[in-house]
Length: 265
Image (cartoon, rainbow, N blue to C red; front, side, top):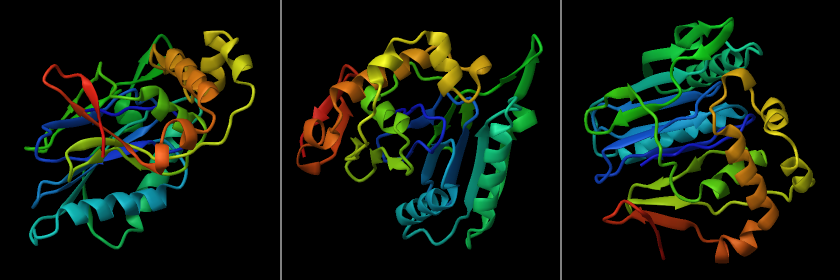
């Protein structure tokens, strides 16, 4: 199970483990920060891929969800892990880390900061350019082990999820229903985007330098994901009409061949 999306302004997605998932994770993290919260009593794990605005509301939401999943487990503490971001030329990661730490500090509950691999600790210099060491992270939900990872399978409906983020969505999207054991997408809406054809006519260099927060350290498939998302927005300017019928979410599960299957609910 894996999530990963693109957006340079706002936060992305998060999910919690159910009984039938052994590893959760995310990748394509450049200036973004990966947040992992784990309750040591219940073993409930939350992973979020964050990259911008309104962190305080999102952080409160993450902690509340871990508490909900951990009901009935009076013992245990909340452990916090922060990974990703680097010493980028625009200081984007530094500002994001500071804002996130401030948001966690304001929470009334006590969290133990166990790991912080961010900023300078996550930076290498090659050819006079700074690069992040960690682009992706996986978490073993049974043991709590955190490890560096990449995920070739980006999950279902990547174009749809990327479209939401490319249009400046400002809230976290919980992408896994741990009660049903299914991946859940939406429902959500985004405003129509003008000039899509013009964007699609631009070169890859133009797109990456205009839309990436760290063009020199960006992942190789960045522009292809952006183009796919733009095309989806052009084909589906009103997702409430063409995608989320009756304002219902889309649920997916894996079949025996590891293919994503749409489930009707």
